[in-house]
Image (cartoon, rainbow, N blue to C red):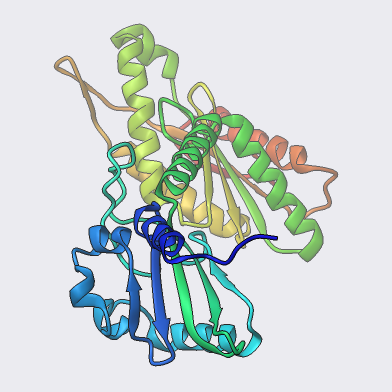
Length: 317
């Protein structure tokens, strides 16, 4: 049978509370501090003599008082612990982040536990708040999410233009086609390419050709809506998926883009390069079997623009 704790062992417990690397705060029913360990002193800059008997909300005005009171009332009523996690609430009290490895974070991410402290008569008159520094965990998660987002962007983006690459663009077109099949919403496609692009490469060099493609992509981004999906289909060919738009509306967009490109001038090594684009427009107003039909129709309209003398917009009929 174990012996009850003597005063020496009680002193050990106090020493442990003071030295552990988590924040420990004991509050009474009036939300006043009764215990304030070394972690709390070091992180807040408030020594125990200035914290004891002070209102927790006065020490930490950033705490949502209404929310915290409800949380503590629930712990007292149910007699069970409550928790917060950094994913839902990044911190309870705002401490600076002092960890050298994770120094890029502005504040300490925290998990917290609130549990009741029962007196010898089993009544609950005090509560213990434990604050865990989980900044390392949060930072690693953020870095992983950032890396995954970057990989996703690299896997879906054309390096030269910054537009969607063909694979991702076509996936987005499939999504738009499926939405049209379910809801009957208007969907149009504009395909275009740069006229006589081989001549530009042969005359001015491939670096000049890349510059032309970059400028066309930049102009395209200025004219598309947030809901449009622009991509580089391949080489000097581009595609724009336009949701909630029929061929008439897409043709208006295409004509504006054509005029903008016609007015462009690309400077390269002292040379002024001017060029035009030919565009084809199609929509899903007629029956189709797959998204590939829409591409084929827009390509046929594009071919009609080429055959008709280039630098023009044709709509698939």
